[in-house]
Amino acid sequence: MKSPLKDVTLADIQEAHSKIKEAIVETPFKRSNYFSELLSKNIFLKMENLQNTGAFKVRGARNKLLSLTEEEKKKGVITASAGNHAQGVAHQAKLLGITSTIVMPESSPMGKVIATKGYGAKVILKGGSYDEAYEEALRVQKETGATFIHAYEDPYIIAGQGTIGLEILEKKKDVEVIFVPIGGGGLISGIAIAVKSLNPKVKIIGVQADGAATMAESLKKGKPLTLEAIRTMAEGISVKKASPYTFGFIQKYVDEIVTVSDEEITFAILQLLEKAKTVVEGAGATTLAALLSQKVKLKEKNIVCLLSGGNIDVTTLSHIIERGLVQEGRMMRLSITLDDKPGALHQLTKVVAELKANIMQVSHDRTLLNLPFGKTRVLLTLETRGLDHIEEVLHKLTASGYSVERHDA
Image (cartoon, rainbow, N blue to C red; front, side, top):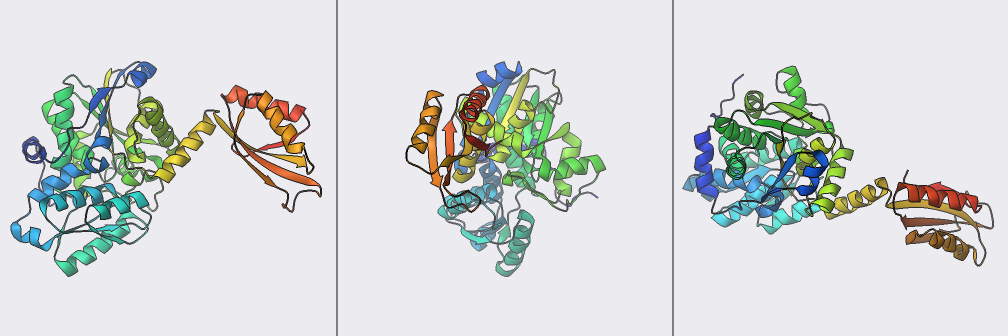
């Protein structure tokens, strides 16, 4: 069934580009020497994580708000969002003197909630998912008469996001493949329309999280689907219901959709932080995750990964860093049972020091009920030099008579 919303054309995207450019950043587009060498390709990063508000969403928001009548502007705007669209609308509404109300899921990262309020929006926390927040926003919209700004089911939003495609082709005319994250589908729709209209040979590959592969499953079935449940750490692309509007564009313009696991996403976040010196959120890292996990076999050489946003919660980032260090053998956690007597801990730390493992944290507990009387449990977090070093530490401690249990394996 055809959507009642109007089609989006290259002309719409070009017009949006000329209208919004004064209020957005033309984000960096650069070749990554590390990932290019690793994958034997020319890997380029389009860094929308460095956009105003930390994500691409300001593009569509600006374009939509500029389309409002004076009467609509006076009544204000309302939207539902897990975070980035919320900030984009709030930021641009404030610049244009328009009041905004944002309904966010209760699970939204606190950093995004605080940032949205900081841009002057009224924030309502409601529901456990985007879809529940969306229903609440529609209810409030009927009460207030504000204009609803949909995150992706809107031609002005899609045209605004599509300006990224124009910028990519301006910087790299011989690009062959572009990886784009997919949540609701507005971003990839706009980019695909722009790029395919100018160069149909460029492959557009969408990336979703395994736990929220709504559009990927819809393509397999040939119709928009609603998944029973979704679960992913990439909350920016956590959408349960496929939009018939964006599904139509994706069906027409997108070459393939692949999915990545949360483990692959977190690994990509860590790699971008360490190798590219850039902070990217889960949704934004899916594109590199797809490349690093080789979800697509490509003969093409010139490949673009869109890093769509960088608004990652600092607590989440801390967990990802620690988890990544454990996976790479650069950190380990273990517990050791000792005799509860003077000098026992000193002897243990002496063995650890001889092994050149750095003690990052130590705690001592003699109150555990499962411990024999006269024993104590020591919890150690060690900085190590790789998986081989960890094996060496474990072997030496065991050979020295210690009862050792790992807590990160």
